[in-house]
Amino acid sequence: MKKPVWSKTFAGRFQRHEQELKELFFTLYRNDAQAYDYFVDMLYRSWQERSPALRRLDARREKDPSWYKGHDLVGMLMYVKAFAGTLQGVREKLDYVQECGVNYLHLMPLLESPEGRSDGGYAVSDFRKVQPELGTMEDLASLAEDCHKRGISVCLDFVMNHTSEDHEWARKARAGDRASQERYFFFDDWEIPFRFEKDVPQVFPTTAPGNFTWCQEAGKVVMTTFYPYQWDLNYRNPVVFNDMTDNMLYLCNQGVDIIRLDAVPYIWKALGTNCRNLPQVHTLVRIMRMACEIVCPGTLLLGEVVMEPSKVVPYFGSVDKPECHLLYNVTTMASTWHTVATHDVRLLRHQLEQVFALPKEYGFLNYLRCHDDIGWGLDYDFLRWFGVDEVAHKKFLNDYLTGQWQGSPSRGELYNNDPKLGDARLCGTTASLCGVEAARKLGSEKLLDWALRVDEMLHAYMFTLSGIPVLYSGDEIARENDYTYHDDPLKADDSRYLHRGNMDWAAAEKRNDPASPEGRLFQAIRRLEGLRAGHRVFDGAADTWLVNTGSDQVLGIGRYYRGEKLIALFNFGEREARTNLNELGEYTDLISGEAVDKRAVTTPIGGFRWLLCDFSAEGRKK
Image 1 (tube, one colour):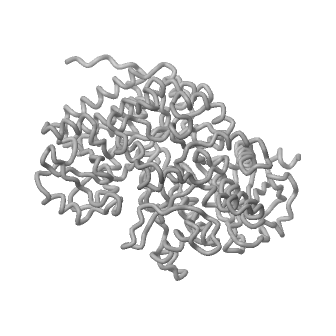
Image 2: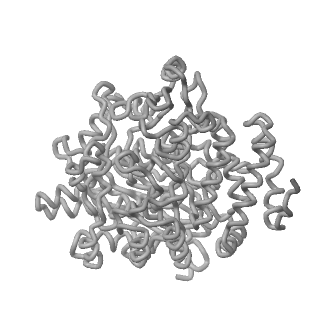
Image 3: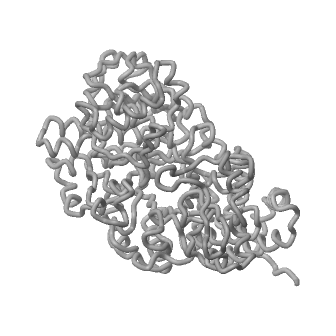
């Protein structure tokens, strides 16, 4: 069959990647020319289906490949149903989204999945259909179009490790279709699964133990790393990779700007390994990156790698052969809550020191809370230098942040508690973990003032880091925990729903009232966003370093870019701090606009200071 004549644009992009693309594909799939030809044809078809408006957006972003690395992007993470009921409802709330200063909208999983067996939408039964109660794929495309007109980028999860057991491929596999069974990991008996289990850790040892499930209809064992209703896809089969990449590009063509690669470290399985972070995973992600650069170069890949830094950083790839554009700064998030509980910044300094040493080309997504739990994957080798025992320390952190520790104002709940291992993860909204909920229930204005100050400080700290800061919907108005999930039989066993409650629109109405907690925090965050967008020192290209504050309760961060220098101080301690800054120049407090005596900078309990020195000619004139 004669190949179609490619467009000049597509041909030019493909030619830049052709040699590496073919080499990687053939190495991974043993010179399967038929699968490769199908893959290439699929890329061209996906490009043909891309709308003129999206192609224009691609062209603009190709000219400015660092468009997402500046200091003007602010994200918001939300569940469509919890925020506004439907996709159409989100469209109607875009004015509010913009009022929040948000121009990066992360819509949590919204593709079709079976009720009660979806893990919050992460068990997809059809990658090309929206969950009916939320709307249609046309609604998603319309929302994305409206967002683009407002300068808002759209992020969507792409669940690539597995499908729902209700997916068409899984239904055919259960019925005995051999080709469909080859899309998954099916075994005639438990011999090989038991061999896998010797090396493969359990993701949810208490709620979903084991990595395999007996499929009664097929009379075989199927691999289910996460939950029994989530069947792991077999990426050793090129048909799986081709079709899943096709699904990803289909979502890009609906206007999705950022594809969040869910659970990406798990996607390649090999007997005798832990089935995590295998070299083939990086090959697959590199091919997906090239596929996007050929078909939709305006699209970013965000890798969900919830592991220690040594496992996270490789997913950036290299400067000449990049993989993900963005990665979650997950260890910094966990270290931050450790610091809230311990009032000791040494671990956080150690963590940030590693982040600041990375190339500036690497972009992180920074967040205080997300839809998931907080896992205590801390650097315990470092903590042992201070006599910290891992098991006992995890218990202390969980006790403190659930309010079980005497004097703790935090209110959270445990998730996936495993008493045998002495381990558990943590859930709760930012405001409740900061003490807002406890203060309101106690009726203590003093405690409430402190809790809101801590909440604001944490957001200021997040905005100080290079990368894209992302708010969890509701955090901007100090939303507290939602305990109503206990009454829902479909949610009661999953404490993550504690912080997945519906948006409180009545509370949001108070956002412009500075006398209310909602208004105080909302206005504070908006002020921080405005300062960040208005000062080049927050640019992703800035130099960053740790500032010696002379105190283990005060974190100091320095930034410098094109004549602007920022010294940021964050007091995690239990008393007011005074810092003598050994820094050149004269400093102004960005919040108050007042000059600061750098030899005696006072930072209140739970407070922060943003101090700016402008060495530029413009700054000297002032």
